[in-house]
Length: 230
Image 1 (cartoon, helix red, strand yellow):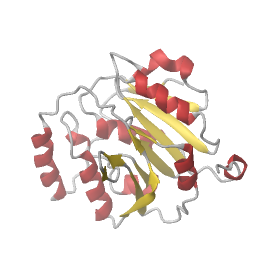
Image 2 (image 1 turned 90 degrees about the vertical axis):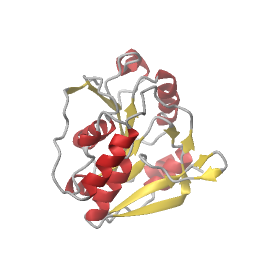
Image 3 (image 1 turned 180 degrees about the vertical axis):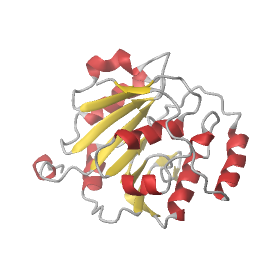
Image 4 (image 1 turned 120 degrees about the vertical axis):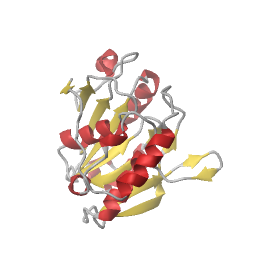
């Protein structure tokens, strides 16, 4: 059973950052779950340039305890940029990037809050069920901000085309001797919440991934304008 009194005494170590893009229906689902989270988790939402269904249309539904940031430009597949912004504005030592199509129940949040989080060079992924298969999360992961920036963060050279952002980020983490722990007993609920952007550029990013593995040249970060909304 969830013990909110116990969790309220735990130091705030984790920011959950929800990546948002033109998806008000699933945003409402996430917000209904966020209301149940204890106060020692910081929450933030990054609107990645939504134009059809911007986050500003839902401000009345968003608790004042949630920080909201908006990227001004609608850049296709700006996943690396939005995630680097998440790490830039977060104030806690650990950051849990949450994709819109995955929901973490209060029971599983309780388990996450009990993780020791003593080694900044450990990062965590979680279990989920896709069809009949159990498959660990890709973008939804818990990472220390120390390791995030030491490895160079997400590579924004992959912006503009779909895919391979998370494998490259994991490769960069491994390069600084950070290692992944897959948590079988912590589950996220997988829902259908895919965006409508064209995925035809996946081969471009796949080729870039192989190039990037053999170089260690810092990429430019936050190639857009952004602001805090609330």
